[in-house]
View (cartoon, rainbow, N blue to C red):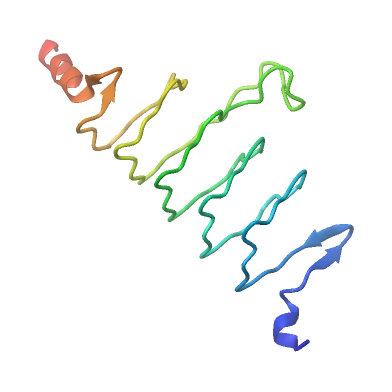
Length: 141
């Protein structure tokens, strides 16, 4: 094998396997009971990918298209789960410069959420337009 492709082979280092792949199609692969921290993906398509029962703390997604994504059952592990820690609190999640138009948020804990400098035209909470609520609030001041 030529030296230029050698960097893309699997390497075992201290009992860990480090995979370096380039220009590869690993569609249909399955990763089960895998520790895969600090992964780096650039210029990839993960369309149709499912992530289940995962710790995604400190995950950063930048410059991605997530149209049609279904994000559900997110938060701290429930009581009875092996990773459950009593009185552990969910760390804050940030959305910045995201296009979430026509999205739906259902049955979510939004306590202490702040929405700042956002286009809220058409935004409804329980069927009530937020713009109208803010207008009424401003009029009452």
